[in-house]
Amino acid sequence: MLVLTRKVGEQVVVPQCQLTVTILDATPSRVRLGISAPANLVVHRGEVRERILAKASLDIGEAMMSVRILIADRDEFLLATYREHLSQHGAIVATVTTGLACMEKLRAFAPDILVLDPTILWGGGEGVLALMHEEPQFRPICVLLLTYGGNRSLLYRLSSFRVDDYQTKPLSPRQLTERLYTMHTLSTAAAILNNRVASAPSKSLAFTH
Image 1 (cartoon, rainbow, N blue to C red):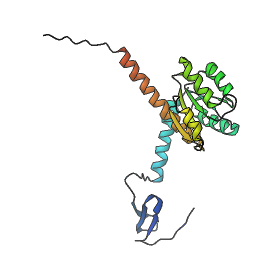
Image 2: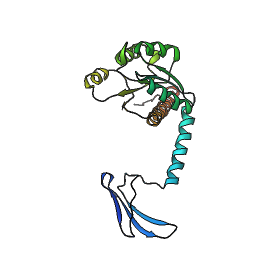
Image 3: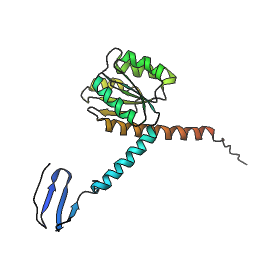
Image 4: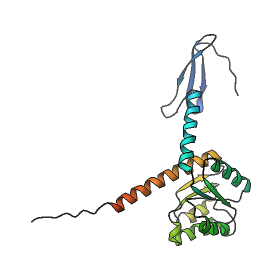
């Protein structure tokens, strides 16, 4: 933590985000700050930020309750960390470390979302996505691809398959949970809209000459 001593009228500047904090007034019990920042930079008081995070966590927990998530990754420590964090939010999580195990789990576990490391061994991410493309029962599954960003040839080969989102490692458990929450929310909304369109009565137009 950077600790600074400032007088009234003096400033603290954070150039990277164009943020300027000016000391407007100071009393023994309170300091008034003036904050100048770009319109796209959100600034909150600490207690407001805590309330926002608590509300967001509650919303995510409610939305992710009983969502079935399959994570395929070579890193067993990462798998355990993701599984623990997602389970705390009510998700039902299964993990595998190889492509072959992922293919088997797709059938046995029937996930709503697949989080896939395309470099997993024994079948690989390419084999998993090819299987999902060929078998219709797997097509409703949302796919999040976790990449290292440097393997462009692999990403080019995978571009022919349906992938709902790409995220670059390292991805924290909180970031992964928030991304999956967004994916699930959008997928649920799209399914509701499609059902409404499918069930809507067709209309015919009659023309009189």
